[in-house]
Amino acid sequence: MELNADFKERVVVHSEQLEWISSPMPGVDRRMLDRIGGEVARATSIVRYAPNSKFSAHTHTGGEEFIVLDGVFQDEHGDFPEGTYVRNPPTTAHTPGSDDGCTIFVKLWQFDLDDRTQFRKTMADELASPVNGVATTQLHKDAYEVVTYSHVDAGAKLSKTDAGGIEVLVIAGSVTEGGETLGKGAWLRLPEGQKLDVTAGEGGAKLWIKAGHLIHAKPPAV
Image (tube, rainbow, N blue to C red):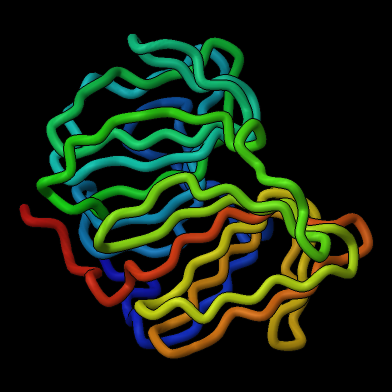
């Protein structure tokens, strides 16, 4: 399967407008944002766990990165409440689920295969003091990418010119970009060479941003 698989194109997906698609596990549904592959795939998705649902135990051969958007995600390593950012690198394993239900934004098979750094962070706890209405924390950085989280005040502007492509998830609030309004759940991907310029709406915005990674994008090594 290929979905939004041309990384040289600008892509916007308003995920809140998508239908939920059932996964192979009962009670676990997803909204696909981009994908190369079948059930083993380089994939970016919104995944919803119904109460008392879980996925079977599995190993992340290509790594897993996710944000808990609502509820509490759980596995044998602990509870991960809303606002948690998690990186499970290649070779890590778990049995994910949720007692009360949750929604996550998840990226699969998008790691450096030699990466072994596993961690979790509460994103808002690490925000720096605002500058011109924008408070930002760096969640992760390596030779392939930089991942940040920002709170943008109403009317404030955020710009990025990072090489290698830029990807944005609107976690809350709204922004305008290229004349288009991106509300909660909107996902934007800009190819190499395109600058990110957004202005927050009346309620401000909370943004997860990854940059530099798209020039390294490739299908999973199955």
